[in-house]
Length: 197
Image (cartoon, rainbow, N blue to C red; front, side, top):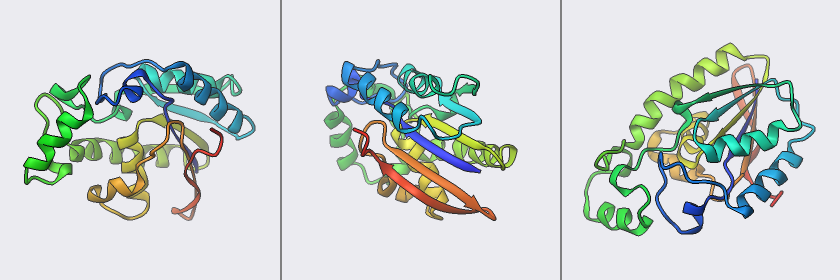
């Protein structure tokens, strides 16, 4: 399998430094332009199937990419959604950060009220990813998602744990990672690369 991971374009919540989670924030003009640039970057990549988070920011980014891949099947799923931030969604990120600093629970175990722990994202995402890897072993697969899910997949492929996700977090919108598999061993061709923007 060849795997292409793409983070969504910039949203209004990104611009205002708000926690998003399952909040359905829309792409800004800059975000739309980023999506167009990443679609140009991936224009000549072979893509057999595409998976996207069902939130608009990911779907709209994926749609731009698939403009150059009209015959590709798109499968949208809530499993690829960002970690739910609960009561912090739509609020400034520093509110959540301040509370986190006061808590002794490690981040991956920390449970925001009304949201989900990062370990919950990992526990549903990794089996889902393994099924994709099994079902599409000889295919070129595009996944358009969000920072935390992408970081979880990349941590997993590097043989790391959920605690290490921050090392693999795509910092820039529409960052691209490309992974090829040789006898099930991942070979990283690109890692959170945003040279197209």
